Length: 73
Image: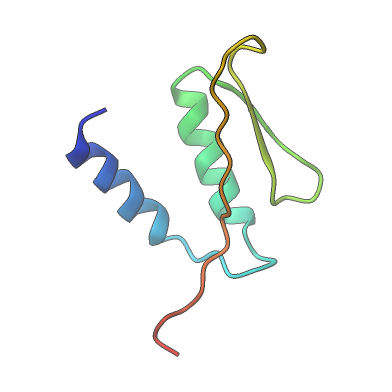
């Protein structure tokens, strides 16, 4: 992925409000994005955790927080 495309994706994600406890909309957006790339993705029951399963034998692990803080306050 080129740096400019990565920046576009980050900006797109940051535009989706996701304060603590209200990350559902962002989680769904990420899931839909990854489904388009043919990844096997599902959202855990708490709505805040996304399990991304590509290859159980892979040596890559991705983990991140989705909640954001409004810096305008």
